[in-house]
Length: 127
Image (cartoon, rainbow, N blue to C red; front, top):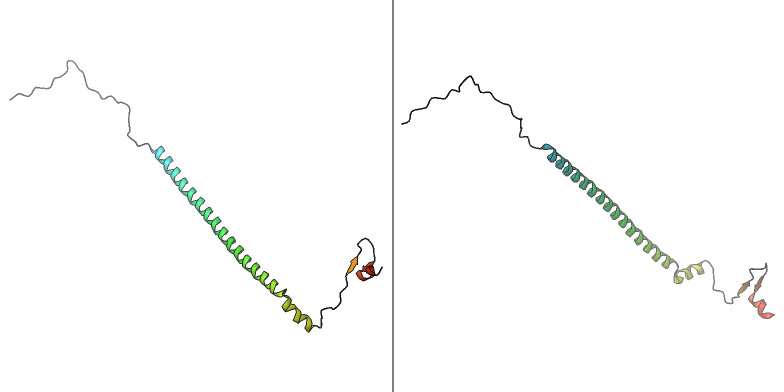
């Protein structure tokens, strides 16, 4: 067994003292993380706003396309109505009811746009 050695006392009056070194705190760097979080939130909100704007435009475009289709259908119906109303088979009986008849003899009139008189085609043939 070994005997315990007594602690050595320094020669003279030396005392121990504590020196303060640099204070180092192990603090996590918060600024880079905060910047990344802010950029992420801004990007998320920006994408949400852009998506909302695109959806709003898509709804407006769809509404306009439906209105165009309705107007084209109405235009087609009106064209059919015009064709039906212009049909001579429909107009002839209505004209006869009003007392109108198809003329038996017809004459052409030649109009001189440079002068005030109207000359009939029959008069021109006689001369």
